[in-house]
Image (cartoon, rainbow, N blue to C red; front, side):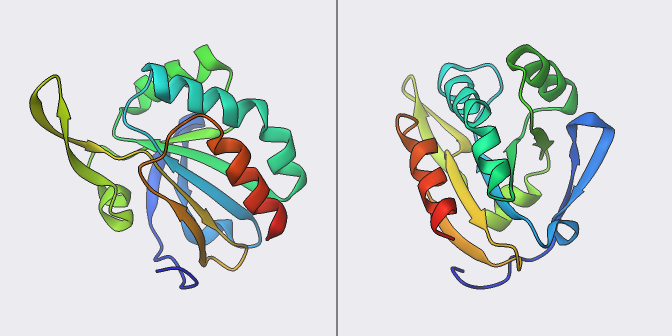
Length: 151
């Protein structure tokens, strides 16, 4: 998939819009998939992207967070955390399937299916430039920013 065009998809977005990948050409994108709104790791990750957002913007790079949560949940999470970027709702797992981020996990001894924290950078031509899977939050946003600077 690296270096190849990412197939188009569209998802409902916070702010009452619809995100369509094909409409993002000319801008680099960070798509970060996270398990759930208002959970500790996801809150920290979102806050770190928020705190570095202006640096990404200066590099002509836009950020979108994606999870299976509802738009209502996303709107509340975005407002609470003051995110300057939009969150995309994927309850039908369309983008999750396309990017292969759904995994079986162990949660308190129970098998659950959920999103493996993953980040993808798509270049200005719509090609997949880099992917991180099984992301650990500490230092991750810094690593993504360094990669985008080198694009």
